[in-house]
Amino acid sequence: MSAKVTTPLLTDQPFDPHELAAWCGGTWDAPPEIIRGVMHDSRAIRPGNLYVALPGATVDGHAFVAQALQAGAAGALVQAGWQPETAADTSRHLLRVPATLPALMDLGRGYRRAVAPFMIGVTGSVGKSTVKEWTAALLASTYPTAATCGNFNTDIGLPLSLLQMPRQTGYGVFELGISHPGELRPLCGVLEPDAAIISMIGPVHLEFFGKIEAIADEKAELLRAVPQSGFAVLDADAPLFDFLRLQTRARVITVSRAGAAADYQATAIDARTGSFRVQGAAVDGVIELRLGVPGEHQVLNALLAVAAARACDVPWEAIAEALPRLPRMTMRWEQSEWRGVTIVNDAYNANPVSMEAAIRTFARVAEGHRRLLVLGEMRELGDNAAAFHAASGTAVAASGCEVLIAVGAAGAWIAEAALEHGFCGKIVRVADADAAGEALAALAVPGDWVLLKASRGVHLERAVARWQQGVPAEPARKDGATP
Image (cartoon, rainbow, N blue to C red; front, side):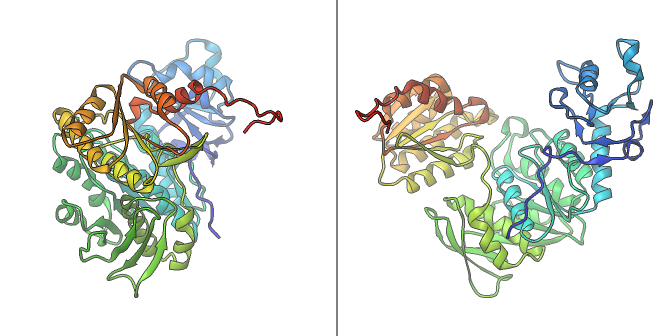
């Protein structure tokens, strides 16, 4: 039976205020008796929290110290020279530090050392959140495990996540996310990883990195941070595999979907059912496995998680039992049905790799039904944005799907390329997510399948909401019941 993964920001761990001060080098004005949990958002304060007043580009968190204390915070982490606006506020418990963001990171690192779990860091361009969730779920089948909540993977989110680990945690699986050069090394300094998993690296954040090789070099900071006693799980099929494997002193564990020599090789992949076989240098014989989600790209995510779990001695039986029930994150191949129409909401984010994989998988899974693609912009692609969207249009043409609803200017690039490459279906160009919802209301009929895919900023979930608002309720039957 699978254990529950402890996900941060859902529970508040107790802390000795003097322990917190020692970790971050701060000084209390007047320490409270106990702190329960750490929170940076004054609107989400729970009784006993330590409120962290972070500076922002437009708003300084120090402006909300009084509000946080009134909401039940036991104390506040503030910059050393800060003074409250009213004398009455000075009687409350303030932990003063030179700068609050570095102090928050110090708190995360201090608690990570106090708990001392075996710590696995996960990064990559595509699939890292899924790999993190699945690795944690497999480990939790055998050990007390904690993991990042959602996408709390930045200089703020990572320490907040770490500070929510139960003290009995044996294994931690924490995600590291970046968008600019130089951001990953400080995160590794907080996490102090014992092992690393690198998911697929692709053209993400090219606006800031310029080329994929620069992205790989940044992601490799995680590999460089792993000690010789640890391990690193890498995709042997990746174009930059040879570069990545040389960036770590640790043992390299390899996976493959394409027949490369590897410790864990996936064969007989059924993209529609999620079933596959595993063999390879680290496997005795052949293991039959099945995922609860479709898609060949998901098999890679599963292999990475399986390899890490096996390196931590999770039994094959526990892995096989857990795989079909692995958690699905919101808006990541989130499948539902509404009035006879099957909706696949994969619009949490998008990049050229995940866009093509989603189109290809959707076309196979929904074969035999009319398939509607709702596709929008993939952001932060820099000067090559038009070319990458055109490549997605080529994938649309090859998919055989029957309808394309192209959202925004970038959607128009997809549509134009689809037409150029022989797309014979219906194309509807719309301005935004709301207009896409109106198009769905006019087009979708029972039996259809709909895929939504775009970068998060396009807010394609609004298309579903608008669509469902725009469809009139079905009339009641004569017996007074509704269908």
